[in-house]
Length: 93
Image 1 (cartoon, one colour):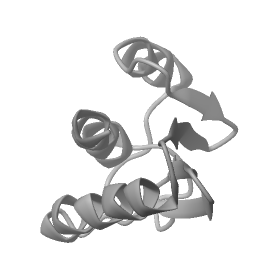
Image 2 (spheres, rainbow, N blue to C red):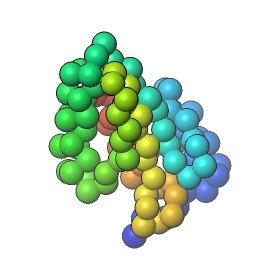
Image 3 (cartoon, rainbow, N blue to C red):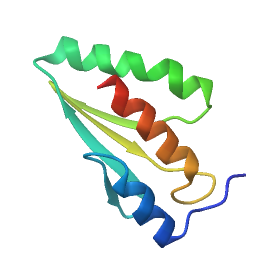
């Protein structure tokens, strides 16, 4: 199991992620695309890196918007896994 980050660690790591916000025990960002097809293509790009680290985001799709939420469910909050995957996902958008 991965250890939860302290509130200070969360603040510091969040400053390094452009656009992402800490919402309670989650890290979130909404990506906007020209249309539905591009939004789904982005979601498909997330699959491989998420599978590679066995850490899967919660995704909400609304036409051309994809909201990505990250939390480490088995740890009960934010861990390094969430911030590492957020950095990877940011490069895909």
